[in-house]
Length: 498
View 1 (tube, rainbow, N blue to C red):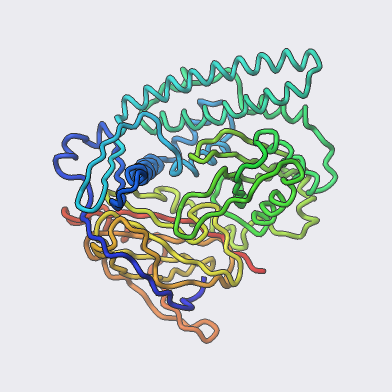
View 2 (tube, rainbow, N blue to C red):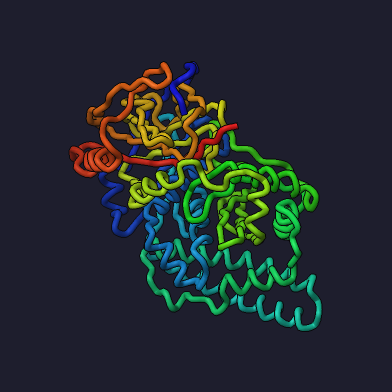
């Protein structure tokens, strides 16, 4: 992204509310035993006011659960499910949009707002997800037994339909196990299913096996599998694919998305969903996925999510990597090696939830983000208390520039979606980049910056290297004044040229 190109006027209704759990509420719901999401809605008298507040509280709760995800959960989920890590990564990416089960609600009125608390007892919820997983496993085993009988009797079409149902169950099992472990459960062997993901995929592959002649053939095979798990007339949003276990995109990522979008109507009637600029959540059913290099082969893996962010279907195809080479479209970002080095530093703790309720996203949402040369990026943020906001943009060439050093969100904008006043244009250098936000109720520390000139343009950049910057910034969050509340988020953005 290059320097700011224009200013957008922002008009907000001035509504004041200091939020956050009171001391009494914190005592009633101690963090060791509970997770509590907060949500607010303006009191308009409409019947859906309370539901709107509940939706925000559920989103806050899901964000907290996602913030507790660490690499250990990926490895443990892999061990429990006897599956492969790429599916585990896809589940983690959408936890922040899920409807969490076992929630109790507390809804009150505060001034001109309705306040909702989504209260989750960790032990009770862990037990609930454990039992849910066992129940899904029994359903899966019964479905696989029927599939074997159908294949043996030559009823391949019925067997394929049953296999897709089994795949849905496996998606739900993986997501359920992940949340169970995040809530403190560790009964690994008790939750290990007798059926593996690889077994299901191999059976589907044998029944749908086609000698792909081109990349377009492979995409048609993928679309066929997707169509068998959806109904005509649904709203579907398709996201760019990500490279292997990373959150990186590429020119190929967006090309593959466009090809799925172009070919899927051959098998299924649907309306393309959108991500509204002022909203985080995608419209309707969403399809996202990853692509993997297996020697001389490429594998595309997609997962289908319902409106509540729960995985319920998947599809995969494998074809010669030479098909992609023939397209002449890069499948790795231009700065792949450098991006991987930075990815490891960020991945140690990419999301620090903190004790401040924070949402932030772009005009394209907050995941699977690809911006093409010339496109504009706008930023949106929502906090639950007056705060100082800092945006740092980590460019593909290794430089880091402050987009906002200390943007203050005052009491009048609390719990409102705030569109930041500047737009940013996508320009070279291209590759994997990071957009990082720090938020604090106290003034943030001064940044050490310097000015450089590139092609006649003057840029302000950070003087510190990445390890030192992260250490100092996160050190401030951890050693914050007792009265301060803080949070941090990081989004991965891939920029590509035309």
